[in-house]
Image 1 (cartoon, rainbow, N blue to C red):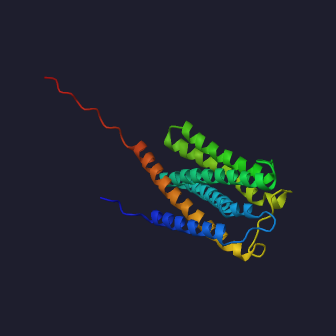
Image 2: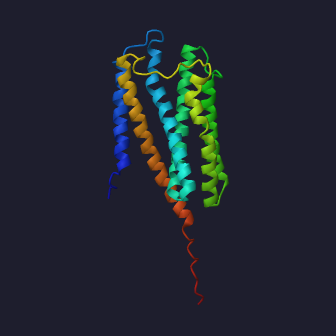
Image 3: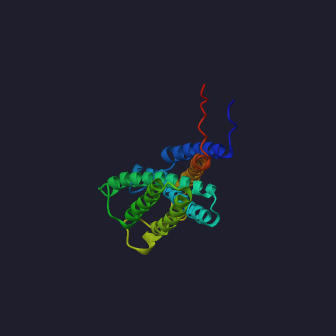
Length: 229
């Protein structure tokens, strides 16, 4: 019997539909940028990847605090799912940013403050996942993972505000007033789509992790007694 679709599946399917619409508008309807031309169209996936990654890690911070406060496995599972999805999105934005940098700056990588803090953010949260793999006892693993995630979150505001605080090759965050109105729609559509897809992936990953955590607590079956004849 086919399992009934749960709420997160509808969220994910809606996100996929919106990202198809937003990407199509960005590629074929929105105009090319005056100076960068069609290269700028990568913005329609690069910027939503960055926004969603930062939101994922913000959710991780909330889940980590809740995990420490309540000691509930559900929050530990949500934290793990958020970290994994956030790391995937951060890796995507770094790859997309490198492609963009090669076309506009002439290099694949530059130790610009935005690029550097984003790379550090990825490494910090990957470190949290690595820490989880080394701790076998469930309660200690949840506690230390939550503490490490809270420490790693310190870099998240740096990633967002660094272009305002320090001189950077990246421009300061744009607003609808500074972007062509024809470019705003696909950017907003993909921002919503990436967020919905991230929620979908976190929910699925959290369910898997929660089932694994519950299986850890399940008592081991007693060995079958063999009757001698």
